[in-house]
Amino acid sequence: MGESVLDWHLFPAGVSVAELIRRAEDADARGDLVGAGNWYFHAKRRGAAGVRDRIAALVPGLESAVAQGDVDAKALLAAILLDRKGDLSRAARLFGEAADAGVVEGMRELAFMLTNGLGVGRDPARANALFRAAADAGDGYAAFNLSVNYHQGVGGPRNFRDFSRWLQVAADLRIPEACAVLGDQLARKGEDQESLGWYVKAAESGHAPAMFAAARRYRDGVGCEADPVQAVRWFLAMLDRGNGDGIHEAIRLAPSMTSDQIRQAGRLSGRESEAESLIRPS
Image 1 (cartoon, rainbow, N blue to C red):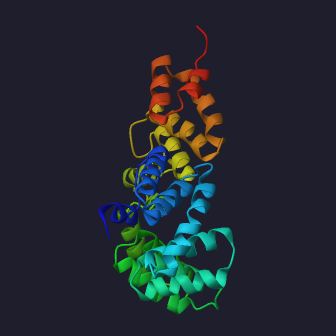
Image 2: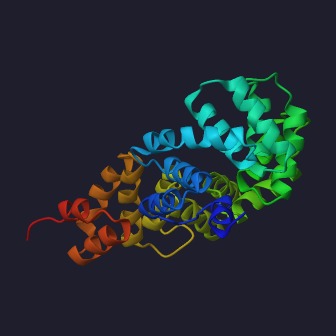
């Protein structure tokens, strides 16, 4: 596999949606359909608009690659089928063939289907074995799913130690959902500074609830010195995920801030026009 393929295996922490789409377009232009599709899926997870159509345009080329036995193409085509809720039995079969060839995405997604009985009979014990194999190979989402199954007792008894272990692995690989859950766990223990750090990591990769949690902590000085600029930054950034809950909090906080502070928050969030609207006329 080339370098462009290896890059998309890791979660692109902190990479903007625009950059993810640029990488997808570059891969597509090089004829790397698998790389393009996976970069587009990363962008889709971040809420990018119009990406589904771009992914769909890759299908004919992927079908050709699958017919030639390309196992990475099998995993990606199966992911598209699963995302569309199309031929789930074919998706499971393609994921299985990719998993048998050692493709970690095939292992992880077949495990997801086995956990939930999608296109295949439920087999949570086998799912956990596949999640574990993919996690051992460095897949952060597999580690997170494995941690969730240990927490919920899916595929075996509940095991908080293994839940915590795999949650930390997934968070260290910067999976946003894992970072946010770890932030919650630390907050319950009163470890506010560390909790804030993990919320920020999740927020940087587009996790809206973590943005809200981080913003409130910056506003109230929990785990840090009170910082209204960072608070308004993350309240405004929630708009990128179509979540307007933070704008009301930003409106309440703005009267206590200077115009320069509000504009700085707007620059940091990429929401300068919304920040400008928070400034009261002098």
